[in-house]
Length: 151
Image (cartoon, rainbow, N blue to C red; front, side):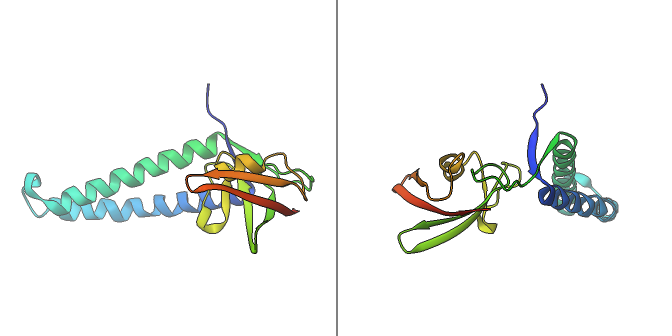
């Protein structure tokens, strides 16, 4: 059974842009490999090894993105009052306020405020409503959040 990847339309666009960028690098990497071959003995050629490693990394990421896009299930942000994938939430803990966008694991990037629905915070928030409380268990202890807004 194939795995379905839940992504937002925005996440799909980002993946498509990354895929285009990676495919554009293929020619550049092929040139590096050809140049490195001209240096002679491939068994002791660091430039050749580095270029081949870069090629492997790019090709594996291309294959990964193509698989994600092929098996993507688009999540539409809904204006529901309960938190689900695609929801944007504002949380308050003490005097600190944070905003998160709940996304699937493929798109998760905590630095950008995108948290996975499978993360501890995401799991604690799923199904909650504005005004509810959510407790997130972390290695440093429990953090209690009040849900200020759900968009």
